Structure formats: C-alpha cells, structure tokens
Image 1 (tube, protein in one colour):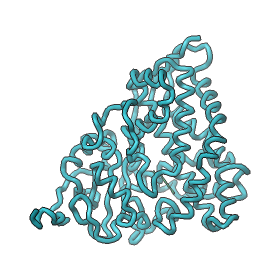
Image 2 (image 1 turned 60 degrees about the vertical axis):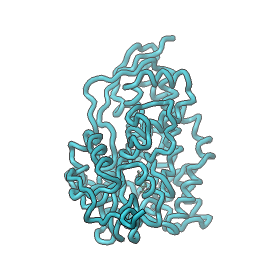
Image 3 (image 1 turned 90 degrees about the horizontal axis):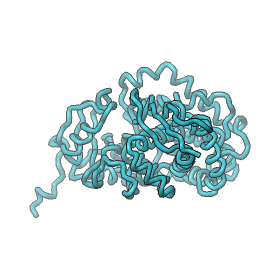
Length: 411
Ligand code: QZP
C-alpha cells in the first residue's frame, strides 16, 4: 500500500452537501437527504450548518463510542459552551464527560434499574388497559382516535410524572419544555425562535419541580435525593439529575410510542405477527425506534484531531451524527426502510450508543409494552386515516396528529 492510501482526507477536500437538514422540507421527510448524505461519503461537510456530518452506520457508531475523541462537555447541540451561553444550565448527564459524568449516570442507572421496572410493571399495564378502555369503550365496534393526541401524548404523562413523584402543578409544562429543548439542540432557526419567548418560564417551571420538598415519597425524584444523602452525588447535583429525567423522559417516549403506533397501523401483517407472538412486543418498540428514529441527530465536539472514516476532524470542531440515517443505512441493514419484526434491531443507534446511551430505555420499553399489550387485547385492526401531520422539530421526528381507526375485537 502506498502512503496516499493511508493518508486521511484533508478537511478542505471533503465532499460537501449544500442542503439544510433543519429546513422544513427535510424535517417533513429526511429520507432523500439521508441517502444523499450516505452516498456523498463517510464524513461530509454541511456548509448550511457549519459542521462535519456522518450518515453511515459505521462512522456514527464509531463517533458515539469514542467519548474520549468526541466529547459531550462542549454541548451536544449546535451551540458550543466554549463560545455561547447555554439557555439552561448544562445537564450533568448529557453534557458532561467522564469523570463528571460517572456518578450522576450511576445514580440514574440504579434509580431506573430492574428493581424499579419490576415494581412498576403491573400498575403500568393496568394504566394502559384503562386508557385503551377509554378510547375503545367496551361494546364499541369501531372508533376513530388521534393516536398522537389521545394515546401517545397521554400515556407517558399518566404514568411517568407519577413515577417521578411530581405534584400536579406544572405537569402541563413538561411537553412544551421538551419541545423547545429538542429544538434548541439544532441551529438557531425559526423553530428555536418560536420557542424563545416562553423558554425561561418553562425552564423555571421544570426546575421548580425538581426540589426535594415538592417530590413525593417513593418516586424516582426522591430516590435521586436519597442517593445524595448517601453521598453518591452531591445535594447540589440532585435537582439537576431530576431535571435530566424530566428533560429526557417525556417527548422521547411520546414520539417513540407514536412511531410504533404509526408503524403498526401501516403494517397489518406485522400487527398479526405481534398478536401471534406477544413476546415480540419489546423488539417491536426497538424496531419502530430504529426505522423511525424519534431522536434524529446529535452533535459532539472533537477533543483533539480525531481520525474517523479516513478523515481527521480538527480539535474543537463540531460533528453532527445522523442517528436516523445510520439506522437506515443499507450497508448495515437489510431492507432498511422495512418495519420488520423478524429482524434483530439490536445495535440500532436510536437510543445512542456507548457511555451516554439512553439510561431510561428500559422505562420507555416498559411503557410501550404496556400499551401494546392493552391494544392487542382490545383491538383487532389498526388503520391509517387521512390527515396525519408530522411534527417538525430540530431533533425529534414524530407526529403532531395521527388519525387512526381502531377496529375492536369481538367478545
Ligand atoms: C435530553 C438532560 C435524546 C436525549 C438527548 C434526551 C435527553 C437526555 C438527557 C437530557 C436531556 O440530561 O437534560
């Protein structure tokens, strides 16, 4: 081999793609953009965002797992904490690197661990049954629902705030806060602009729900404060760790559920497969997360000159990872756009990968399992109705309205 074959591509010679991935056109349907990005090369300059982007599975996976080379502590959005003032104090989990990351991560992993899941399981299955009974009242034959507004955006808010131990006041702020938070990871476009006026109030409301005094006994919030009493994190850190739960646990599960409901409606044969093998309920959620990727993107920052995909990313440079594109890369997945419950979706990067991989993913899976079980019980068929509308957000892909017809099971 010649040295030329070993030499990394100088950054100036990288392929360029002159598309704004945060434009409404791309947010409506990013498929074509993802294909162009993957075809352009392993690392591609995006002048519209001023970053180097990755859309292939191999490089996105490599970047996510190289936390030493691609750090989070300069922000995982478009802003660089070095240059710019963040609109909220940085997260102790999302926007830190080891060693600062370790203790908060350990605490949340324990709080959201297997013991918690076992404790919540029966109650959440009953809650899902109750909600589905409201939507498909016993004796009804066919109902039309908005699977976003009536189900996906309702169920997580019925179970999660109670599990955290929140009071009633301020729960209505969680989803709008999340919407702005996820927009704010993107560049300062119209979506961010629209949220700016209300952002300080929403942030205050969420922060007000993190204090020890307002959290009920027995919840995730109280468990985080108890970890502070044991010295596992400091008392100063506790409210910010609670804030991470409230930031990461609402919009994500709402759009994760809407992704699954959409896919089940579009693929009746997969719903039938799920009915014949209910044990598929867990992987059904992961397959929906893979193919729809509710969390579409994340940024990192090169800590030093880092080689990736034959390119050296210069120290301090932001990179943009397209999780959704990696999750549909034909180099990694057979028939990548097919929602297929017979495939093994593990390895998808819809929950991220590496040390920052979603610490609440088991909670999200449990929510989805509960909803799927309730639906399988009460519903024979799920059909799309006209009028579905995508929500446009700089980070999240999902629905604003998802009209579905549910045909009840007989007997
Ligand atoms: C949001 C935080 C998809 C995610 C990046 C979700 C998320 C995770 C953590 C936080 C916020 O710690 O504030």
